[in-house]
Length: 139
Image (tube, rainbow, N blue to C red; front, side, top):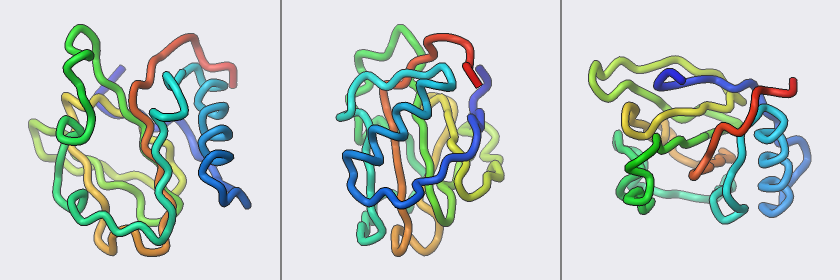
C-alpha cells in the first residue's frame, strides 16, 4: 500500500444515529477487503461537533495508543460529507486533493491530516482506527 489510497466514495444517506452509521460504514469497508477491530474503533462526529485541536496538521499518535502497532503499519480511514479532511505527506508536506465523500485510507506514520477550514460546522465525519487489510476487494 502507498501512503494514501482512496477506497471509493460512501454516502451516509438518511442515517442519523451513530450506531447505524458505524455499522453501515464498517460493512462498506468489509466489502472492500478491510476490517475494523470493533465499533469502538470507529468514531462518528455529527455536524454540531466543534473540535478545535484537529485544525492543526497532526498524526493520531496524540489521540490513539499506537504503541501496539510498532510491528505493523497503523492504518486510519477518514470520511466526510462536506469539506474533506485535508491530507498531506509528512516528508514532502505535499497536500493531496480529495473529494467530498471519498473514503481515504492512509498510513499514520507517513501522513499528516487536519480538519479543513470551517471546522466541523455542518459536517459529518468518520475516523476508523485499527484498520486491517483482510482480503482483496469483493467489489
